[in-house]
Length: 577
Image (cartoon, rainbow, N blue to C red; front, side, top):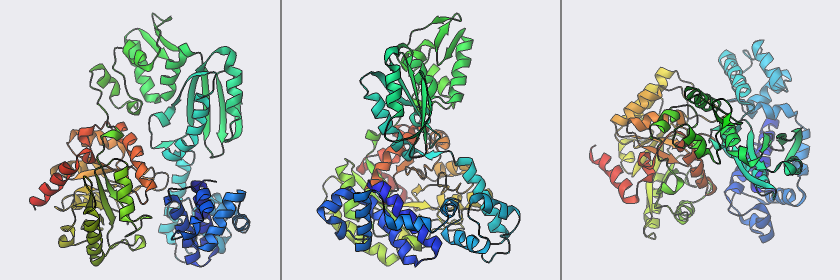
């Protein structure tokens, strides 16, 4: 078992213990152990073999024993026994936004509710309204949460879908009889959530049966739902479906374009072809009804319609066809354009690694600066920093910076936006930072009018440099604040505030659909990993995919600026206060 699989089990143990009403410290120990294990650069097997597993802060002797058992046997008796002691549906209920283990335990004790379906029925029958600690408002929120869960239950976060897809795709691509292969569908378009995995490949007809048999027999395949000469479908052990479409190589470009989608993009392509007395589909591009236009690549397909090549990320029917016709497809930002990391955390608040460890990892990845932004004081659950801790942290940063050459740690804060739009720190504390990221973490159930006013007030604060994850949403978890984003983008342009595109695959907030408008208004977008561990720094690549989807170029990205440029940018705003 790898660290991700083991961490998931440890997290579930923490949840199960909380549902059972065990000592909360015991539950938290498993949760913290899961995060600590994920933050390690080495895999658990290496840590066990070296004995280092027992020296890691946050992993005690009992937890080390359980991790060892999982690595050596692939199972854990304690976990198995714990699962059998609690109805399976109770854990599933914790996926409902705002319905944590304590509430699950309470409704189970009061009514014997064991499934989401029973919970929904109880709410509709108004049974929870009089339960201590609930009430009609909470009952309504639970129903809304269940609807949210139903809406997205067949979707998967991008990074989890990608992790499931890559081994399967690589196996197909490297099969000796496969000529060409590519990932297609929403994964290729870098959508924020994924329904299923699409792989397209080409091969000689005589080799199709062998390749399809190879595909459905892969180790991660849980079930085979279809096996044919042009398409085979499986369900993976990770719970996500995957399709392989196989065609002769002269058809590869057509199926790659068609099954990359989106459906809306394909519809607009068909409409354009029709205007030119042509026809486009997964079978090819035709003129005069049935005369095939040979296309070796997707570039050939677009060129046959008089278009510049449209990158997959843009294929959402948001103007890309017109832009391709006018030779106005943007030169999209790339990971290699990025010069620094902003909005990251350390052990001073809720991070898993020290400032030095995070900074050194950032420098070793080729970046020029590391923007530390631990939480502000009101975020008690994340060990937010009181003013005296801020001073202590700044002293640590000053000392570390003396040892760097051509690299710098920037003093930042993720300062909470209070309900009235004011900042969690007073101005004199805000002034002590190089830059300020203003974010919301609480009271996300406000009306659009109140929520927008809250964010607008923060944007107008002269010390704020970046609006962090504007809505506070968690993909497949909660919607976040309902905001008039165009008004907020306009205000950001007026007050010289950048807007974060949070690169965590759990957030992707700012939504890519607003990036184009922000670009038009001249607002800088800051692609920030919001990393709480060294491993989290890698989330930057996910953020790049979303930025590309939002039509963004290097010139639109705040942290594509050099160290000298970004320091000057922050200092210029301070000089106007």
